[in-house]
Image (cartoon, helix red, strand yellow):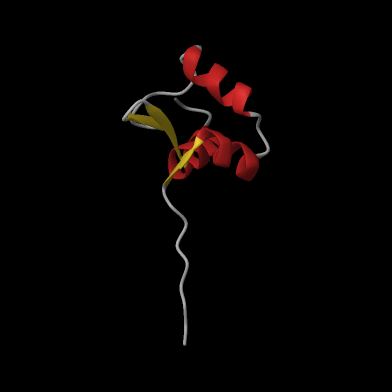
Amino acid sequence: MVVQVRTAEYVTIDLFAAISGLTASAVRNMIHEGKWTEGRQYQRRAGRVYVSLKGYEKWVATGLV
């Protein structure tokens, strides 16, 4: 049996912190200070914030918000 595991595109701030090495506080500051854009680097749903792994990778690669 072959099992494929696909990474979710959006993850919680805490999981993102563990994956990226940034602290959860640093992620929240990026959002609060407007360095990340809702709809690009993160989304809000049901009172929670989810970080886009693709959005983060693009932000790192280009430095663009």
